Each structure stands twice: as structure tokens, then as C-alpha cells.
Length: 112
Length: 115
Image 1 (cartoon, rainbow over the protein chains, first blue to last red):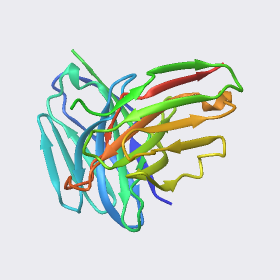
Image 2 (cartoon, chains in turn brown, green):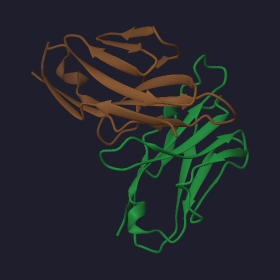
Image 3 (tube, one colour):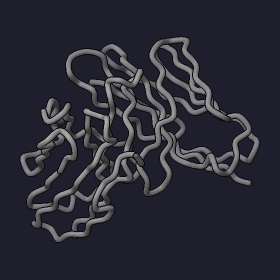
């Protein structure tokens, strides 16, 4: 069974204080690892897809990296508007299955 | 095109009533997914359609839940004889095989409260 564990559950940062969020996963063949941002009361917003170990993707203050067992979301010099819950999900390879298995998320608060 | 839309955004019902939610995917996306999310948890997969065919159903989807996508466009999710444990956010997502990573784009969700 595919599993995703995210840590920490919650993270409070001062504006400009860089940090990393962790996503550990087990999956029977990885098709893709996805990062989403979710604001309260809204649906998840797509950020990145990573496919293979060693891959990195960047968007503004965010950079996602992937190894064979985990992914990191690095946040550089965060701003209060980066406050949200960040979700990690995996999609397994094979068959007709396309569903995502999500972790419980990391709730990030950036204080001004 | 403004993305995935869901209706209603909020639904309050009494235990034992039936409810139906609608999802309109991004127009060129032929894959459609339903997820359920409870407070403090990530979304949990419920079911998946490719065009009008329902290809995957989660063990979470009891007999009280049914989903349809009759013409391969919009989809409906019906819950019969609602229970308090059904209270959650119901999310719809869509994707296209033309996208390089088959990324799923989510709608705003329908918040269900069962009293």
C-alpha cells in the first residue's frame, strides 16, 4: 500500500527565515511525486511534479527535490503570503490507476 | 476557461437525507477524480473516470456513494442516507493525458455538514 508521511505537521517561520519541508514515501513504482499548496477552505493548488531521483524544480521562493525515498520542499526567504498547508502526493506506476495518495500536509505560518 | 468548478460550495443536511454534488472539469480534460478531505488530513481518493468510464473505486466508497459521468463531461457524486461521518470537503479534480505529468487540477470543493 502506498504511503506518504509529511513532517513537520506545523512550522512557524519569521519572514525571511528559510526552511525545508519533508515528504517521505513508499510506493510500488513511482510515476510521479506532486506538491500542492492549499489555503483554508480552498482546493489544493498544483505546484510541482517530480519524476525521478535527482530531479529539482523551482518556482519563485520554492524549490522541490526528489530522492528515492523522500522529497523536500525548500522555502527561501519566505513571506507571509507563503502561509498555507503544503501537501505532498504520490502517483503509482502501472495499470489504469491514476489516483494520488496524499500525506497529511505541513501547515506553514510565516510571521511578518 | 477558469478551471474546475463545483456546485454547491456548501451543503448542510440532516442525517438520513440524500445529497448530490456536481463537478465541471476543465473542458479539454478527459480524466476526472473525486476525493474526500477531513480536517487536518490530506485528500483521500474516492473514484476516477476516464471519459464516461469509471475505472477505479476506493474501498472507502461504500454502497451509499455513487458517481456518474454520463457524457464524459461533468460528473455527479451522490451520497444516500447520509451519516455524520460523511461530513467532509468533497473535492473534484481533472487531468489530461496531454499534460506531461498528468497533473491533477482541483476545484474549490463542496463542504458537506451532516447534522
